Image (cartoon, rainbow, N blue to C red; front, top):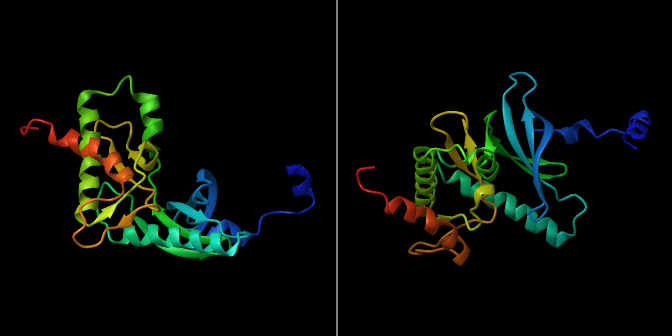
Length: 210
């Protein structure tokens, strides 16, 4: 089928393969629930790479179209208010013919935490485990100090960069379900409190000397 389409000259529109100045390459992952796909993208001149999150609204009914747009814009606006090394930075928001798109920083060796643990859990030292837990807790605490809750925090929403080093680093992402709390609020949804409490307690229960 793919060969027949190619021979017939039926190919994706070049515009569909481009977001801003970046050309979409391979698919990294997708989330049908929030109607987005993450692509690796490359600048044709500088060869800089980005993670491009493309929310697809083409062909959706009006209510779904608006809900997807709100989720995309909310994710970008939340990240605009956060500036922390443990939170994946959103660089730009674009309108694509298929829907809204967010451009993120991308490290060539980044890997999702659930994949990282599955591949390396048997060889991770206690120091590395504690370091990862501290970094996650610190990023969560920073977000909470800015009245932002993640609400769907899990290993699937955490990237590990420099995974082969003695000091791998984390980046929290997937903030489309998050929200900004009203002034004076001290907690998010029960799900967000549950997902972050263990991480924060891991930090609090360490001896003060560490």
